[in-house]
Figure 1 (cartoon, rainbow, N blue to C red):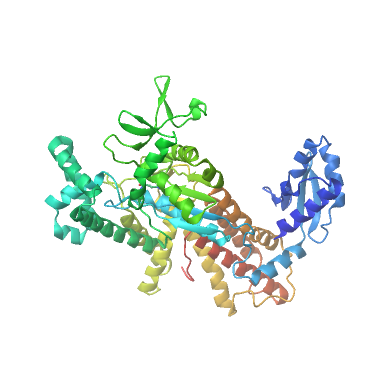
Figure 2: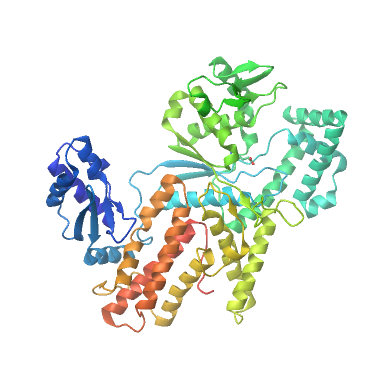
Amino acid sequence: MLHLALQAKLQAAVCAVLPDADPAAILVRPCLDTRHGDYQSNALIALAKQRKLNPRPFAEQVRAALEVADLCEAVDIAGPGFLNFRVHPMALAEVLQAEALKEVPFVPKTNQPRTVVIDFSSPNVAKPMHVGHIRSTGIGDALQRVFRLLGHRVISDNHIGDWGTQFGKLLLGWKQILDRDALGREPIAELERLYKVINTECDANPTRLEEAKQELVKLQAGDAENIAVWQEMIRVSQRQFDSVYGRLGVKFDHTLGESFYNPQLGAIVGDLLARGVARESEGAVGVFSDGSLPPKSDPFLVNRDGEWVADPALVRKSDGGFNYMTTDLATIDYRLRTWSPDEIIYVVDDRQAPHFRKLFLTFARWQPEAAQRVKLNHIGFGKILGEDGRPFKTRSGDTVKLEDLLAEAEERALKVVTEKNPDLPEAQRKEIARIVGLGAVKYADLLPNRQSDYQFSWEKMLALQGNTAPYLQYAHTRVRGIFRKSGEQASGSRQPAELVLAAPDELALAKHLINFGLVLETVAEECRPNFLNNYLYELAGLFARFYESCPVLKAEGNERATRLLLCDLTGRVLKQGLAALGIEVTEQM
Ligand code: ARG
């Protein structure tokens, strides 16, 4: 891609002026403001400062050594020594022609592939997936798709909550008040009911609580009956998860739930004790502050009434049971031994940030060498709010089930599609509505900065105008419409003899297209899919402007062929970009 070619030339020029300079620090990036140029480099200023050179004359010297006449129309020096490059239309045309022949244009595979484990979605057994699960599931899936597209090795792992004290109550409920018919009809609702009833009883009655505990103890001891019931609960829950994932088009390489790590937990606590990482306290075992961090940034301390007191990471309860933390330590250990990842990404809401800070620090104290080799990365996100600004709920005040939400999205999309296309056969309208409705929900969830809370609004997400999935899907159908009308095949095979980029709107579109790969790289670096949303929205806008000012089918010869190629590339980037967000496109809308 052009910025890489420019970067290589700039590195060569800098090294010609300063033979001992480190070329890796010299980067070329797109200009934020395209009035200044297409690409820029800020590297010369820092370099000059390090060597106590006057940056401006230094930049002049570098520019004199730069051999980029074939790539650029102009290289400007701005301010204290920024370099701004304006690319040559011919160089741009060459890139477009070469990329058009590729299956995925504008996305070079990385030459430093990394192995990345992505832990996402991770719902709990015996509970329905609710609207909040769209966040971890959607962000995690977009990340796995982007990493894969760039050529990284991804291992996605659904760390479902299939173990823990709740199973004591569930088992008691199953044995005493299970309604078999209800279980057949709506298994998750029935499991939820069991839990709620027994939980209320336990709150009021210590004998019931003791009974539930006994069921848990039997399960933990491997009692055959309890194990069989527990497995049945996992099976029915997994069926529900799978139906949601199938609908969302989300796939996991592994689903290793919490219970998978159970056999390791005792030994891990033993090891933590033996190494002095954890210690006993009031019958429990915990990891405490080692004093290496200032109290304010030490997750093992909390401030109570102006005093810093211990807030340990508990790894064994006083009754001998293990904690969420213990399982997560075992999970890191397993993942490192099994896949040797360069990075483990946890897509989990921001309320668990303290948990992950403790987890990562504890792991580093437990296995310092292994911790050096892996980046442990909590990718947090905010809440979904209703239009009243409070946590999103149904009208009756219940949490919104994910299945219901997705069904409603498709229903509402069907209305939009039917208004636009009353004559399409129903089956086709429904299929379009499925793609548009699911796309709208996913896109709206990926669009805000992931750490901010956002307001859920059907109206906004389904709008055909604005930064929405339907708008982008519609832009894609317009491209497809052009090719239907032209009677020509879209693809790189019908290239113009000579690509002529002349009109400003052609150039602007072409320049944006070639930055697709750069945007994907930024998404991967910062784990922020919203950069891709915004890139695609801008692309659709540039395409609309181009299409308005540059007739395509009425043009002739090379001009027509050039414009068709721009249409084709726009359609493919829209499709590929949406696919990277887990969103499908259609031929018609
Ligand atoms: N099941 C957990 C929850 O619902 C999320 C698990 C996230 N992953 C992890 N490795 N802790 O809160």
